[in-house]
Image (cartoon, rainbow, N blue to C red; front, side, top):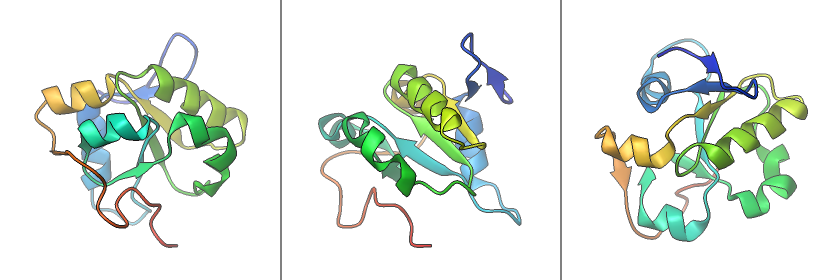
Length: 128
């Protein structure tokens, strides 16, 4: 599946495409997978190598996200991440997409996940 627009006009990709994009080799910056679920949900299950930015903090912290790097926003099923993606677009982020199906779809497709509390530094934005 390539990028498509959801009924609200938000750019959307499926989990397989998100995983392919973040693993792809190329000249440009690798996309960041940003998880907007709350910490208890993230501790239960999460995709590997996510940046953790819960929705409860998103409005205050979104400017920490790079605006010159592709962003793929994920939540549990795609609802919250669609809102966060639309918010980013409204605030000048031109390369942000929603990951449809969210972590539920990620895990059900057999893509790599982690469980339990975050290890030191896990979930942080990469140093620039």
